[in-house]
Image (tube, rainbow, N blue to C red; front, side, top):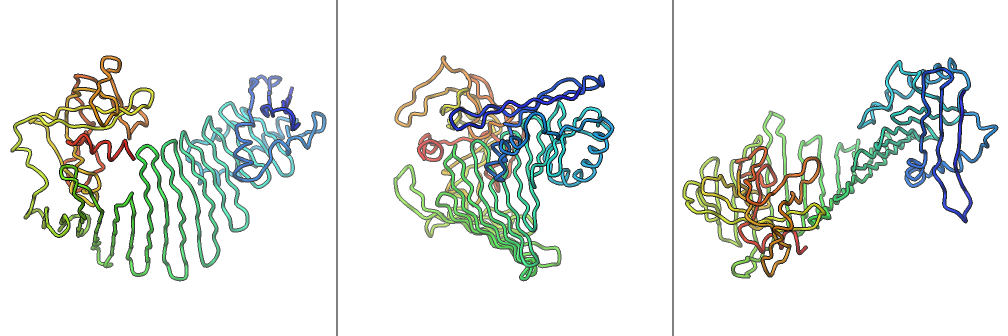
Length: 439
């Protein structure tokens, strides 16, 4: 017996209940009952594509709504036709597995009419309403429509979403979109001009945990093989110029500038970074405070160094500070002891002045966990004996336990990169609040 059931309420005086379809092929002995909750996709259909699923289903009543196919053989044939028609299109767009596999038609029920179809499985659904294709696998969701010259996509994969609209004609290809997750949002516009062969990119990235706002403008000339990038990261101005000479050599120029207040003196100065890169290797880099050169390196030779210390000269413990969070997501400050035998890297890159002295080491001991109070050190121990990484908390959370040694999974010894593997910290406690807490 094939059966169908709808629970819905379209009146304006009462809240709408879930749109559900209960399906079964129990008379064939192959398919148990399962329920498809269409309310889980109705909001996205309406908000992003303007398709009202409730009104669409309400066109039919219980007696004459015929999308469930009545004959199993016919159902299999229609499913085969649908899968062949949309299989490649779905696979091109899917960031997650399609909730059915080939030759598994007996585990599906087709729902079709002239304009719409719905295939339900215990894993999820595949459907088409008006011009919108839908694929839902567990909590993952893909919706897209391709009409005339416009491709409209919405993807929800775990906690991440991506919404893009792409327009293409003979002269240009434009893509407008937004990528987001619980703590970060990236809005962007890409334009490819087929007449000039210039790709332009504009984006605005915002991290709400660190209150970091990054504005980016990029222009890539495919004929001249040059790329110019301008970035404003909370007042840090960065300029990148990349050029491919067509003979296998790629050169880059990096310049960054920002105004900084020195914690020890309270004086303001302009920090400047200047570097030249050939085929990925830095052959020259310089740091200046106003007009004073505090660091200069040519190829592998350091000529001036008034900012970093050598590891072999250290014979005392270093106290380091960093922001963490407790199990409820509340900010905490962890106090670390970096032993003399630990390896320390002070990155020298385009964000050197902006990061206000951030360092990383290959091991440290957790001495204390404190409230995020800038004026005084107040411990949360023994009430809280463990804290977690504040910035990288996806997947397995990195733990900081009182009295335990913390070691990163890998450690990057290069001074050319600041955001990389290691235990990051600040020697100045106030810098933690300036960068992560007080923004």
